[in-house]
Image 1 (cartoon, rainbow, N blue to C red):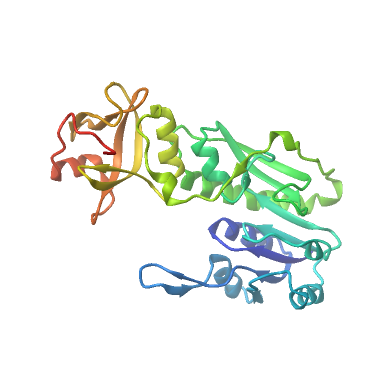
Image 2 (tube, rainbow, N blue to C red):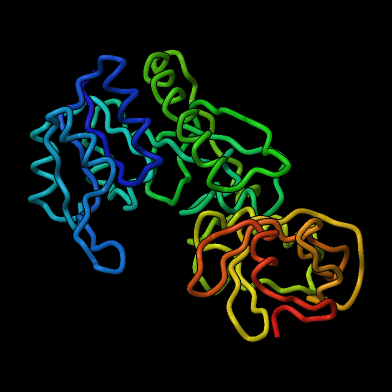
Length: 307
């Protein structure tokens, strides 16, 4: 099938690989413009662009798809279908109408739950027991199109958003190829809008741990914000990133250190229950096991995190 692929980050790479491996004719790739990265702000190509160039696929990086010139160029490519995976832009109706077999999106949730930019992270933050991927026919709304196929998987009890992200990226790639193979036989299913919720973009403001929350809720936040932007708190007025924790026995004032021992870890009381911090990163330091952190930092019982 003649395909234009639209995608940008790591999540989209397996889908593009799968299309190439399945023998589809990917005639062009659309991705976001190169952006400055890191402390030195080095202009860096999106992962999808790097893969496309490796396979000598033409790459286009328009700022917008709303211009007539861009739409004319896209029509000239004559795709049978446009496939989309985490492209990062809404497609205007003029673009949606170009391919005769429609625009198919790979979305990292079990729609209609978690429409929006960060569905995988929010499924972990919310404590969902299952997550998945949906392929759908794109419509003008945000992730509102009719569903084609779904893949469902349990969320591991200790699984981070990053780990689930990697799993669903691979699952989404397989689901996309299956969707194209079975496209003529699939009956699109409308979404139940009453069951939808919005997965807004993550930001650093939401990363601050509120120790008055129950331990389970904080644990889900820590896992959902790993690897970015990473949950954080303060210890003796200094920022402390928390990459991993797990439920522990104990009680006390929210944020109170009720145990500080390299063998047992740093156990902190929450609004209900307690958490044992397992991986942390102090200001100016590296990410490390909490046991290693405690060997180099004296943390007294009764200290209060977050003050």
